[in-house]
Length: 344
Image (cartoon, helix red, strand yellow):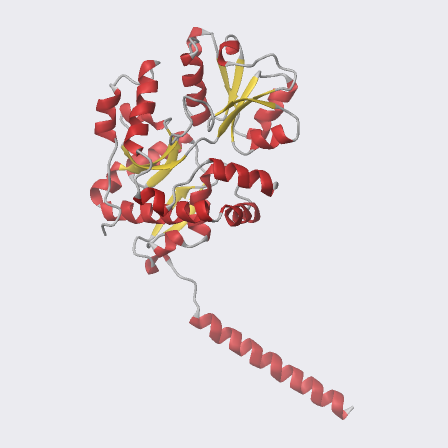
């Protein structure tokens, strides 16, 4: 009995000591507040499920945003909400395709400040479909995530280059928006649409499962391969008021891009574990991540990629099909901003 009593007393004392130490530790490691960051709290769109958004997820998870002075909240927004946030400065930077170019011409206050990655969109059809090229799309229904979004813009350029009008009012192509990629894929398999223009990884996963075949791959198509399809767009309001803040964000993104280029397998682990994208097939995810060709610090220093050249290329493509009125050289000169990433 006495031994049992002493054991219980010792156990109670140990528990009290453990709780006391935990309390002290908690006081010494209080969670950082926004005031502990140079630039405070900001919102960055980073919950759209696209695999190619990896630098945003990595910069958040690896602490690169925090290192550069940001308390980042990743948010889910549609294209219109992003434009509003960029205009008023509540969203300082987003990644996006040349989908933004017509909006810039219409007055959305942003500048292209960097490249993000190469192609990340696929158009898929049912395995028994007789559609094999752009010319076959006349009179067809194409699913997209949103009208004006990147898959819609890419599809528009692709069909226009094949001599088919992408304007809804002309009736040669019908675009149908699906806010959920799974619903879009289901619509394709059910025969409600003829083509699904999809962000990775959904189209690639469905292809590997034998549910679809790929009609178009942005990373391989001659008109798009080897070019940044996606860019980083900075709010003009933030650029004008605090260019050092934008430079700090770019440094965080550069760290993330460099880390991904050198650690694709670890990047995929982070994405899968964090459930940032709807993919569980690590082998496929690594293959896709590598295909996006995120720039390393070395390739960036060597100037291996011309961001300005890609802006001019895609603005010219949009100009040729009537989506932009401004000549590409003029558009590029006005809307590409080469920022000194080292400024404070």
